[in-house]
Length: 267
Image 1 (cartoon, rainbow, N blue to C red):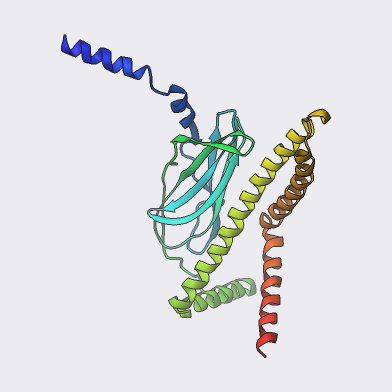
Image 2 (tube, rainbow, N blue to C red; image 1 turned 180 degrees about the vertical axis):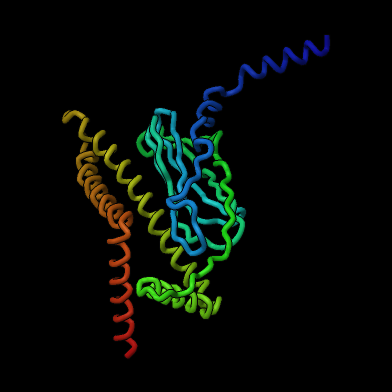
């Protein structure tokens, strides 16, 4: 009898749990199984490739978050994403292959659904970790130069690259590599964030345009031009940061002008 009473009480309490909240926080969106692949496979030491993964959003709401790529326990990079309802999207990062045993996988962090204009709800991703892709990369063997002119040139270039790598102190090489990776991560994350913001602003402008003239307040009249300015600014930022060919030359010009300004101030 006591067991029946306990069972009845537990079932009674379950009836009052926030079922809609549980449904809103859990979704089968996420990674498609076995979805780590590479722009070049097989690859070897020194190759500059892309690591890809694929996110599936079966919900009708827009899904956003951050994909984090790992090699064993080493962080390779992060990439923000936005996936519209009922769609899939491939996410990638750049990777320079190094020697060793690799176990590549990705996880999803900060996942949320768009539930209204500028309003988001956190969501638990059931498939929040991709399958692991294991690879072993051996030390690259540089072929000896032959009598052929083209082969000789390739061998000389490779020898120069190896000479620079082997003779650059770690305390110089590591900060340079870290700095380049930091700039690239900043460019990528800023480009994705500005693109997502531009999408949100476009939706807000659409809502303002759909309002009837009689319902428009002075606040809305002032807000609409500002939203257009915001939208065009974010579109421009997204265009610049999502195009490496434009971003890096502009960055180089800005750095040059800054250094020249500092030089003139000092000397």
